[in-house]
Image (cartoon, rainbow, N blue to C red; front, side, top):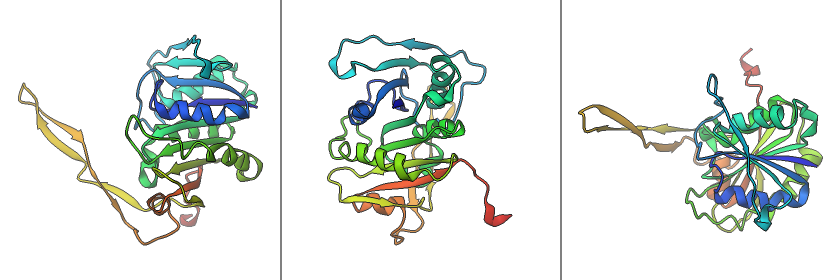
Length: 249
């Protein structure tokens, strides 16, 4: 099985190395990742900006057998570069895309900002089965050891039974620390409030920094991704790139 791996935290992120460890036994890995952090880029692509793709050579044992590339592009660019520049435009050469493991969860409305899931959306556009993985811990030294054992069995299950059509990918979020199990979930209704903090620079110009307070609009609901994380379950959420609201038609 040919597995394309990407992320939005860039090369060197602990979550990427944890994901490589988890999926290496499942097939050959082609790794295409940004050369630095690209969090919050969503599905953005580098229109009008030259993109470079550099093959990385390493003697480290943990990366042996993998083809690893770095780019100045976004996570979404990583998929486009891989499919076109590495696989020659033949989407059928890739059996699975995995993205992550992101440092910080991508539950609720965070899904729409996520570079981790943005890569999955692009690969789903190409009818390639895709799974994004995130951990509810934003620290650089986050502990992925509880999550890693679940990933191979989850990937196998989703490949065998979990993709109902070509428009669907999966958003998988794990809690920090020990895990109670896995749950199918839906996206929680939540939103960011008081998102910007004003500052003044040395020239007297006002600028703004993103901070924000997240508000869970349905804290009692037990079928959401946030509820699962708060109760130490892995959240497994099917996501469709068909954004039509059919109920409103």
